[in-house]
Image (cartoon, rainbow, N blue to C red; front, side, top):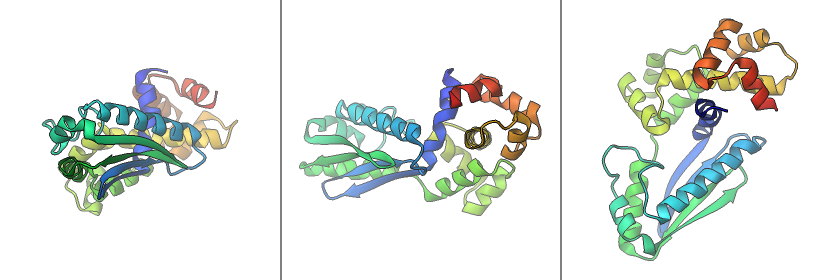
Length: 225
């Protein structure tokens, strides 16, 4: 599958449960899928967290959870004191976590600063869920409902998932089409398109090509095997 297609298939895992917890000896980053039956997404999460742990052990904080163009507070000390910090990936039933521990007080303080900086705004999570499940919702209305300006919501979503609200919303609709197809094999594309929130089957076809680089039929074939 093309890179864009893989991107489409993986974005929704980040709106399930993403927790950054500050603890006395360090902290933890937890990422879990809402659907326990979604074994593929859970496996992807676990691989992702193992990659993060390996990057952090090496003092590389440039990609995972990088939320600003400049260095994130705490990461300079975490990089300098990386030999004193442990990053252990742990599988959980719905995903996994990276447990961060240290006996170095300066390192623990730095981990706490980093966790505070990268912890997502709960308003952004609420807006993301509304957009993901509501293809017809107006972005400005969603921002108002959660107490953000439209500009704040756009900036926050770019930070969290690298996408603007409308693109995020479009991907949610495409994911819904795939979920419906998986739940009801044998249904026609026109029926699935209407239930997923598309104007018609050609609308679905245009969106599948634009977002995944595949036709709707090819996308289904890849998804359902």
